[in-house]
Image 1: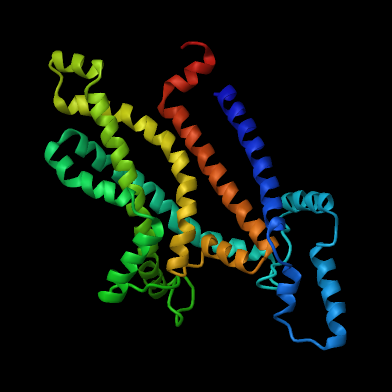
Image 2: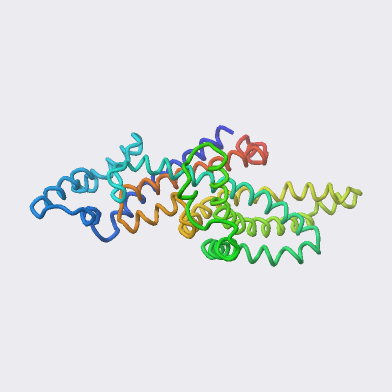
Length: 329
């Protein structure tokens, strides 16, 4: 286990360094001048504009050579100081991200876990029941091929506009004061449901199709036929098939996490949900280098941490991974 984890940690460290470097380079390749974008929002006297512009340039350290900016960026990662947002000047980037990331975690974690559990169960049912397969598979293919933003728009139109059951914008009502009280919690759940449900449905379709195919493969394998010849019950054979079929699904979970984070950008934009996805789009439009870098870094850390957790889980559920490092297989 130690060899397995140490190898994974080295891979993730290399990935993190490359991701941080790309994160630093991409905003600086964007056209435009963020200082000029900030200055356009201020009305100052003609004679003092140059002085303020110079002070802002020094404040954001954008006049330093790129290697110096790169070293300062690494320093900010370890100190937790990502500078000041240009878009929400003079609010610190760390304060903005710490608020938005809570909304993302509340949205993404249930969507990931529930879509994986429900999708695998429905896919297993579809793999062993011809009737269920004929009914559910067209639905699964439809959901898995639906873009996040399109399905989010459809849900907003029917559930929000036509039926008026749920709100279609924001994380809570404008008249609500955030706090740990039932009125706010219920209002937040009503705003949260459609962004969650749109991401849940798209992911559910993919998981169900994958598990359905794995169950069909496992049912035709030699060990299943051998168990059947020994008189094992159909339920027992399905149980072994599900346990073997779920292993690739755990591996796929690591890949789907990054995909779901990307889908959150469009979903949060459709519903004006105050998470990192919508904020990332706003920071690109407003050329906010520091906020964009901070959001990218938060997304990279979330994706790497989730993938590392999946690797640890896989190590426990599949003994072959541990035995491969002990030389027993």
